[in-house]
Image 1 (tube, helix red, strand yellow):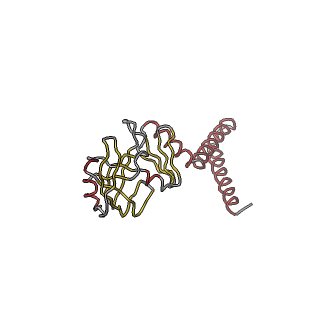
Image 2 (cartoon, rainbow, N blue to C red; image 1 turned 90 degrees about the vertical axis):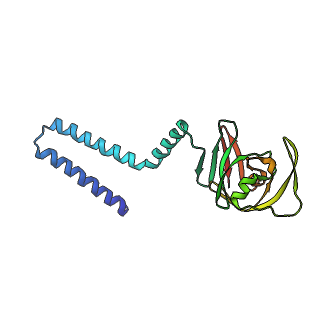
Image 3 (cartoon, one colour; image 1 turned 45 degrees about the horizontal axis):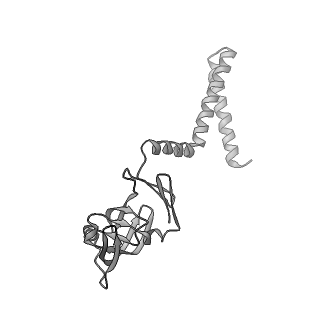
Length: 197
């Protein structure tokens, strides 16, 4: 028997002696004393069970709460889960060079794209060189190449992430395949997008 088990056994015996002493000093009939003893043992057993399974109970409670009022993103260790929005798309808050912006996650986009406003607020400047021609739903557009020093999505951080900037994006920012392909894996499970760093 280890020292920890020995101490636990001593505490259990001490608690039992205290309960038995309290019942004996009140001169309670044996039948009623037995019922009270069983009641106290049940209370201690329930308390011990709750304490032993406290992490499982907490996780179970969170799971139920997520079904009632699901959060937009959930970090499970290093894995990030993003809930589908009411519009049917996956949206997530992204920190670029310390500035937080809203992004659409789009596996159909080749590269991560910033609106001009988001680029300005995040201190991302066009990197010069030839612009990139992108085929969008509204036709081909010309976008300036740039680099975000840091791009953080929940638990996932990428440094020196290539991005493009164009007026034609309006106010929409897109997290594209160059980010998704940097992950060890990503998948869609029901209403959740799962990102593995």
